[in-house]
Length: 261
Image 1: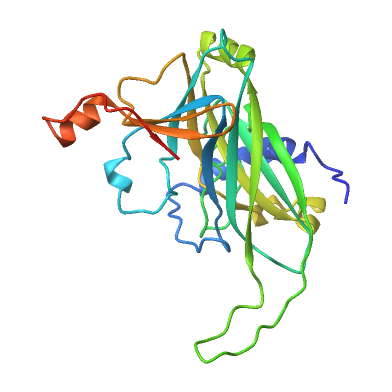
Image 2: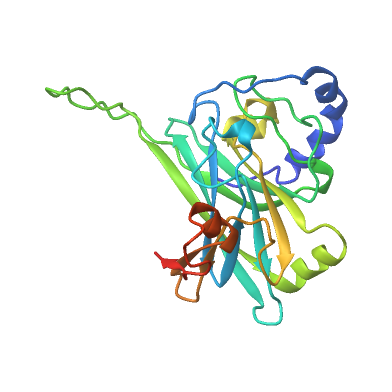
């Protein structure tokens, strides 16, 4: 199914910004994952180092994915022309309608959502004036499949799915962003029915949380608690920071090496 309104998500935002700013403040997401909200995870994939920071203490009791929503990505353009990251979007419940999945980013976030969505899900956190689409994907409708009743229970007629979007970041362009003071980008996923996209009913889309990625030159910042280094083959090595190791055990080796997964 072709997309007739590739720019509509951005252009529509310009007309609803004032409304959103006046009426959406104070919204507290309480929705269900898969129905009112998506999850978004970043995974180092090839020739890239991802630096993880300590989670916000205010959000330690809230599930926001396996990794922190705030990460740094170390970029050395003298060694690599590009680095590859994967963005994993879950839990998308199957439906009988065609849908489109958008993965978008902006170099600015917004103090108030520029498109109003359901009160149960996350806010649109990015600034759409600076937004670009990293990827847009058609998700075909699926028929309901009633499942048998067993002695221990019954599976639901619809399953959930996830999609992995791989992005090659151009290190020369990232260098330009860093030099211009725009090394931080904000990433969010959006899922919308094809009929709602055609009718420009963007308030019906469901969103992931907004993740923050900061590109840094050459190596992880000093406050990173651990790093994930993916080599050419995609093998990931986890390296704890010396400060984390010494805090955990003052008598331990401050640089014990990495764990490969």
